[in-house]
Length: 219
Image 1 (tube, rainbow, N blue to C red):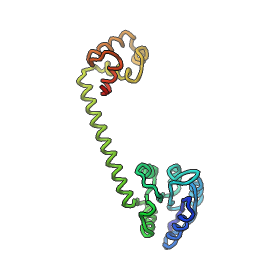
Image 2: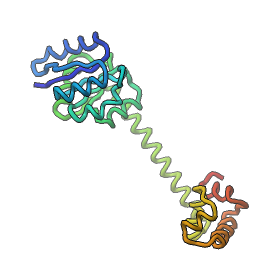
Image 3: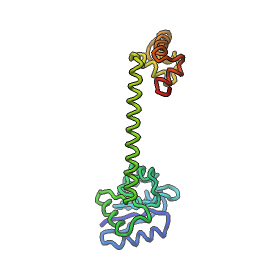
Image 4: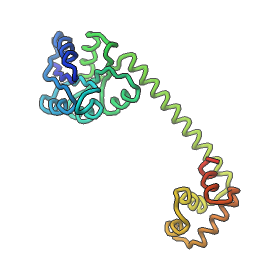
């Protein structure tokens, strides 16, 4: 038997979901909650197999409590929100499934509950498409960051700085003064100034700001 907790602030929605679920022989509703805080308390008490979780609720929304809920139950998000960041956050938070109101029928709801109850995942087609799109966007951003890092590395190699000069310049870019750099590197301030003069020459920079901008690829 799959024990289900229904969490939604709309009593009409809760009643409809209860009616859908109780029509199945292997599902029973063991509790209801109208806000996130009550949902966590109820889940801790009744230990449902699956919790149907709305997002937009008073006192505490779904996203703010999903971590706590997942300690006691498998979570199937059931909400009207299809924002890609919310979907990603809910899945990262531990949700095993995500359905959007108006995009599923009672038979799919039952299949989703049964899947989540047995440790499988369930995403409605629209949510799956959004999730794939989000993953592709992140992959593109990751590739762009890697390309940028590689370009910056190649540019820095052309400057021909020594390892010690790189260390001095990194500290300069972090906002350290000559005295602070000297303390961090156990050098005298005169030695730091000598390093900076060599750095300015190699980077064709006339001051600290220009050197920092060129080292970070902003000029």
